[in-house]
Image 1 (tube, one colour):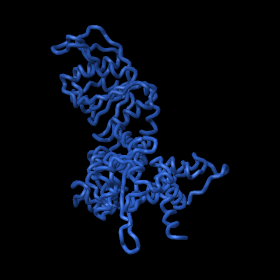
Image 2 (spheres, helix red, strand yellow):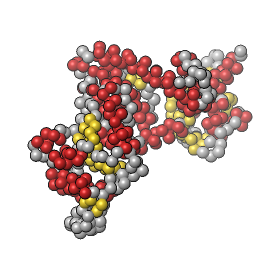
Image 3 (tube, one colour):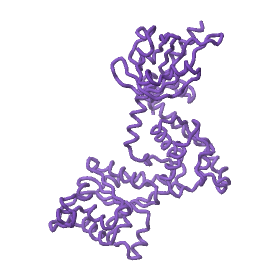
Image 4 (spheres, rainbow, N blue to C red):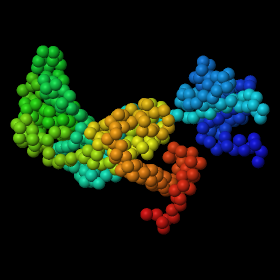
Length: 454
């Protein structure tokens, strides 16, 4: 095979757009992916100036290819956008390199560009999405909770979530709402410890015009705003005694009176409350009403701390990594085994929230595609954890196999859903066909026949 044919075949096999130019800025090659991304055919592109075909915001003032041709240095992953043949604006990432002949003389340049449209959509989704879901677990400590959750959500009973700070109580409350018959109604969250005592009553119950100085209009409270939906009261143990009485009446009579009103208002909401305190001890100390506790804990779910569900650390850490990498436009493939070793050895007093913060910090500071343990915060690099690394390394050694098994199952499922058509499956999984084929061979995935289907 001739060298030109060999090079052409390589260019045609990759999913990134590639074009080359000569010293006069005329396009000399234009691969299939470049046609797809720009909406311009190869026949139209060849021989034209690159800026006539690849209409980018970088062309006039900061052309990466021009800089490479002037300095001789390649540029990598420059962000911008191009205007397609149909006039659509498309976000892209550009890399450039020199073209030289066999004697080393410069004969032109090459530009590779990647379509970031799907990445931008994912970024927007992540920016509006709540915390990473903790509803999928490999831990035995979570089995009972996850099994009970759908039944509890489908009921009308009040639910009390117990657990340390950072265990994901609000995430569970939102999942309860999502699984409940009230899922089409609103979800309102109130942190009883974050609102001053003198404001909490009006925040919950609302007020009528003239109820106090400055009340120049009626204002609905969170109870009214949660009508037909779910009200989540976090840190319920911090609720003042006077408000406990009012909340008890709402739960018993399904009505309340806004501040400044003498007319009861009907209440229709589902209450989910949460605390990291021992409400039994608060009742014994006279700081929490027993009758209210009985109303709150019709169904009680106790969320285990992260140290009791360490099997979930790899999945949670990877999910946080993907989220922050997308938000920050970083290309990061994962953590080193030493990082997982420290993750397993650490006690996580701040639970899932602390893990999220640690991963975010490491993504911000990352200088390589694999995050090493030198980026761990001080508390995870302490000598006290070093002795536990051997135990942690045993667990981290299983992370890769667990993740590979999950990837294999995901690919098999996608292949089945698309009748084992590799092109459609690759598109659905967001990878090119060559990558999918390598993974099929790696995992030894065989097409299922009707008799072999589970």
